[in-house]
Image (cartoon, rainbow, N blue to C red; front, side, top):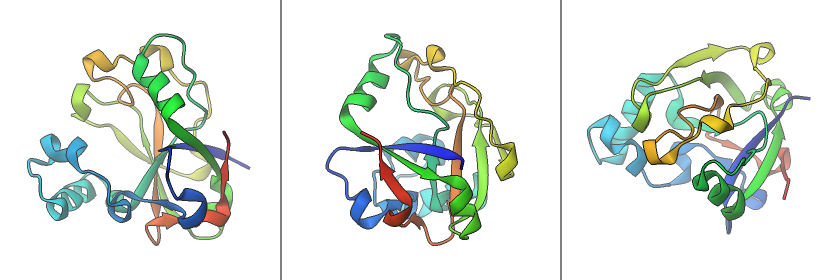
Length: 166
């Protein structure tokens, strides 16, 4: 079992409807507007898919729970303001839910110059994450924490695969 974690804001429907990838989630595209150079959702999805195939149908996840060390209030806000979910990545790959795994291991502030690498299941790195490097005042949150983007065959992880952790 390769347990992965995902945070979703309180009031979500993850246990009922599953965990949606970017396109199906209907979430705000504001985090991508400056990088995509547009505020049109369809064009942002197209831009996402130029970074790697299937990104618009992906969900991000971590190999461990956030470890807040008093260093960045945003991390605490995520821990306090979100539900934590987990799922078994091995099972999702075996069942054909996940079609590709991409590791994002760094980017510049604001998400520019992202560094993605396609990996196989046995290459997922579960070594401790660098939470101490997070600094939201410099726009360095998940830019400095290794995480994974799972490309989802149908754009979501069905609820039956997901467990609520908190």
